[in-house]
Length: 553
Image (tube, rainbow, N blue to C red; front, side):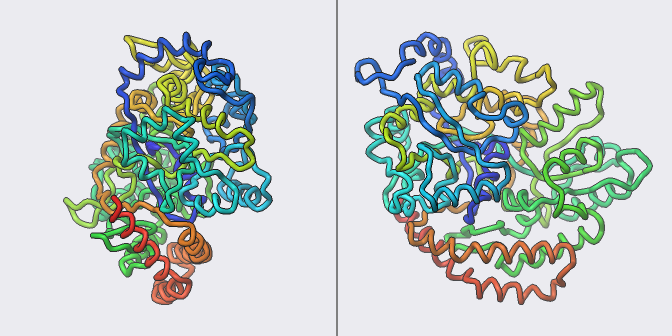
């Protein structure tokens, strides 16, 4: 998942104006990966210094500058990735001093800094970003980032072998104009999870004698019971049955998927459509408005950020929400159990609800795609791109895979029965950090970077059975409408021109419809405005690129 392992991908992809995507891949079993661990320490000394001799290994740069969004879990304990365990270790192994640059936290701030850097040309050596959704061909033509085809082939043997072995992955990483432009984050080969979905307070369900809901009607009955049944037992009607967020709506389409729609562009039997332009979208808005008026959705959802949501969840106010398995459901469980080992607080992953029993709702998060669109590009400011490519390629080696996924041997992991295994510093952190927060001190495994995810690590940092069960439950959805996005530079530019204003208007109206500030009698006017703003032209552009992609598949 990205392995869609945590909140990482949506946080970056939501900066773009395109649809969402998922990832998953990895060529080595945990046992194969572990076998490299014992040799990692002995080989690191040999590869520690930059060298110009091919016989002595790749030549790494003496230094480089690296712009990347800092993972929020890592930010709990460190101020920069320079303090992170893997990058301290990587400097020992390669001799490369990295100067990390982190934009201010917040999606709009990240986007603003990115756009400013592109406009001024004041660029670091490398940048991690959802490049696929941000006109990479145009960025190459405009002299912002480098075409990497030849550089990867000559100076990145580990990634090259992976792409030779996986032509489907290489096709994903190649733009419509034939350019490769990033060192990608790649999920494992055989993902068994979907990483984002709905979950609820299991102890509240049990207290109210409710079964886990599978349909919209059953969900409504559950939320009403949460509202009226005082499941937190404080004698007050202060429960928030469902915490709604735009980010969750965009990520996995909870409730919207019951109507066969996604939150953006998708394909149905080869025909490209746009969910919020469909007549059935009115039914979804009607449901959300009904629930809002009934007090089933947090009245303050527009002004409630992640910290407020987490505080309300951990203080027994929220009954259900949609979120990530590891940093959401799993994180809540771990924090509550650290506070009180005897807590009755429990959570359960719920199937994406359908309209009728036995149906499958549409959702994203299909465990079949390999790449999310996020990767590390080398900019034209880099004076030594070949050496930087060799440094980035380290993450796709056996030693690099161990390092990026598990961190520093003897600190964040040890080898147990031939397999790298997280230490209690990670799994039972003495400072009461969650697993993802503890990992953030050592590795970007719960975020992104130029490496290949490992299934063994994935299972370990989702250790509790509730999280694993939830992420398996979330696979029970219709993932067939996922649409790959491979727009060429002209198409990307036109889509950006259309969708920026359209999305601004669209979300303004969605919130007004949900909160009752606008009557749904104006839905036809909303549709007419989307048409006026160019949604049909945008849909045709996506249809053209989809047809083109399918012909070369």
